[in-house]
Amino acid sequence: MAAIVIDGKEVAKSIRAELAAEVKELAQQGIVPALTVILVGEDPASHSYVRGKVKGCEEVGIRSEVIRMPDTTSQQELLETIAHLNENPNVHGILVQLPLPAHISEKAVIDAILPEKDVDGFHPINVGNMMIGEDAFLPCTPYGIVEMIKRTGVELTGKRVVVVGRSNIVGKPVAQLLLQENATVTMCHSRTTNLEEVTRQADILIVAVGKPGIIGREHVTPGTFVIDVGVNRLETGKLTGDVRFDEVAPIASYITPVPGGVGPMTITMLLKNTIKAARLLAKEEKRKG
Ligand code: GUN
Image (cartoon, rainbow, N blue to C red; front, side, top):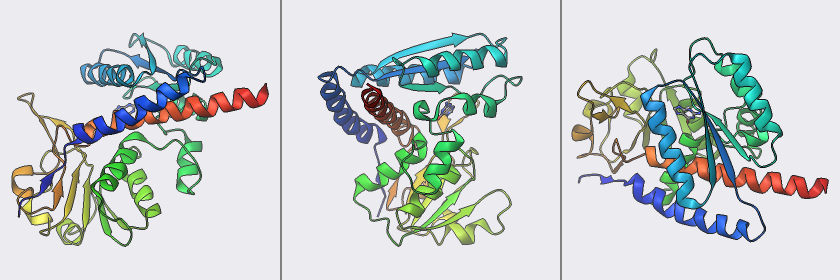
């Protein structure tokens, strides 16, 4: 039987409705969550992602601001901008859009963001707290993937999850979050031998490599839940995933399309993190008096 194709836009829409209600409730306490996005340079894909983030904020009632800086910006200038935002009590979430120009160290920039305002969940303090299961800002794409699986009603406890790709942004954290959900998690990467043999053991297969169509029919056992995190732009301009959708959809139980699968969830979880940051910072302000 053909897979259920998960409509990420619909799932995101229902979460955003919940978030809008939360924002309304916070407004009654005089708290308006606020996100500042820093965009350095002219990368068209980054500009498009940032537009999506601003639109998402508008949709749920979060105040947003975009600071645009030229690609000639020095690392020092960027770090100073972040330092000001760290100190500004009216800014709850800070996100620096990646990638950055080559002369700026991404690590130095991520480390400079106050962990309490790190709504991307990239700061080592948040990564470390996530790893040991303490409260943390969770990185948006992995957080969105887990939420999406949960909302199908599929149980994670005891499931065999195979993650293909070991990036810091998706592969490693999603494996960690699913481990905390009591799944049995295996990670595969570019040096994995006999990839097919491993992926065929999956109940849930998560593919986050960034290579169009690297996963096909031969990697998937019928009935597998397949999540495609790849976002690849072909020369034709068309967006495509890491999974050969036409081959895999007829045999999977569930599958996420590209576009319209995981993508809309990522921004939604950023909105959720920004609301969480606003709540935590307001609580801290109140404690300080
Ligand atoms: N560029 C691509 N994805 C992301 C993301 O999740 N966060 C940031 N800051 N930049 C990105």
